[in-house]
Amino acid sequence: MNRKQFDPLKIIRTFTALKILKTIAALQKYLQQQNKKTIGLVPTMGALHQGHLSLIALAKAQTAIVVCSIFVNPTQFTNALDLEKYPRPIETDIIKLEQAECDVLFMPETTEMYPQKEHWHLDIGEVEHRLEGKFRPGHYQGVMQIVYKLFVAVKPDLAFFGQKDFQQFRVIEKMAELKKLPVKLVMCPIIREADGLAMSSRNIHLTAEERQHALVLSRALNHLKNVPVKEASAQIILKEAVEMIKAEPGVELEYLEIVNADDLSEDLSHPEKGTIALVAAKVGQTRLIDNMILG
Image 1 (cartoon, rainbow, N blue to C red):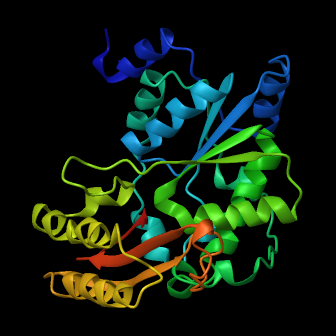
Image 2 (cartoon, rainbow, N blue to C red):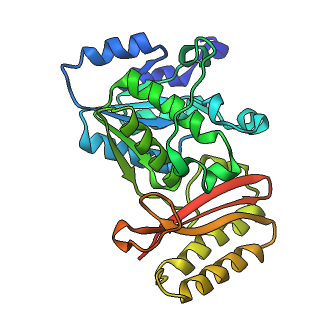
């Protein structure tokens, strides 16, 4: 056997049912042949970890066909270097999806999703401009643009997103409402490492030392876990959590806020809508986000 031509992944795929499709036309043709079975969509940018696989598992439990998309979307990156550095371990991702018994991998080229230059803008109000939107202006327009394209292409009954990107979920929720898309959005719990660090594709960029420093984010959120948000003491506890992060070497805090979980506003006078603490910080050169629902 010519060793240069040997590809063990081909052997693995022989025994799995994962369908890999690269065009919208092929994807839609395949899904139309599935006799109107319920479809679950898990949109990702690849570099899959256990958090993504938990979404696949939840989608498998609630729908008949699970489509996972892997597409590193250029329009949502506000930093060209960040786009260039984004991890793309596609062969490893395929193995993980096969092991998770995902049904379809939709893996288009950039020219498939953006065949020509286009303008996109959807006004969804302040939910776009606060927190992440303040530090990454234009980011959520790119997110809405690609998720809208995926929803139109896949026509899912349910779409699954992780709680770690809580603001993104609210943004997509608003987009789906304004576009009158018949899809139910499902928010799935954050999956954490044993030490509390929220799983993220960006974690691979952390050195061993930086990873230890990054744990301050989950510690700060836990400090706020049972904060009485309507009492004056809440601001004292929030300030303690902020100082905790600022005191950690190698960590540059961007924001830590307690907001209304419904619209991400600072109005906490309606506790029935829920409250959430959200944080973003740079650990070394790696930007991380995390959050915790309070109460």
